Image (tube, rainbow, N blue to C red):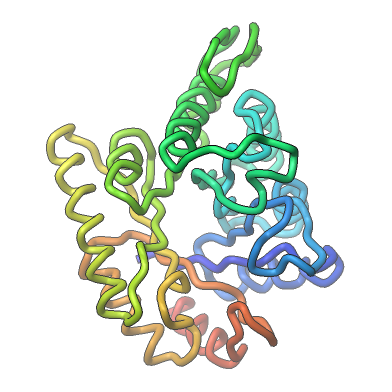
Length: 283
């Protein structure tokens, strides 16, 4: 099992910089941040952009993987994003992990976009992901898509696709199948449930879909679970963290991600729990 920590980008860099350095020192395998214009969980807070944050984090760390949790098509074009990814790959020394998801409110309307149905949102995301893959792989990409188009997008110097995993988020059956067929990894938050048992029961159903697709197509994908997306905060206690990780391991997850403790909701937790968990990561 590999362990990740997600650091919300709601603090100025002078305050968040030490957190990224501590995440590496604690022994986490990867550290993440959210990608939004405005996040519904903290709509009245300061908010900073993910790509510059990860670029800065790359400059103050040396080994830890750095990721987006997750980028969506709500306010990004895949060709422009490909250039940013290429740049962060270069600066970080191939330590970037690109989590991708369909996105939601309020980012979906901030730029004056027309509302889309759930089906259209998934269609748009799948087109976005395929075009991003191409612009990281091929030179002179020209595409006329339903949602995204590009003309003669250049990638001079050869493909960078092998240097960055695309980790595709999905919770519903259609999106989970797409992630298993397309991504280097699958990211999930689960699909609801009032108890931990109910939450994991839903995740198990998605795991079965991934297993089916991978078996049929001879693929293997890494599997990332956001531990704090369920009904309990994973760092509420060491015992709960161990229980959630154990359940994830039984379902075949390769990676789990918790959130850096905050003094207020969301992700309110004690630093002492994180420190105790991290002590065991170093052994």
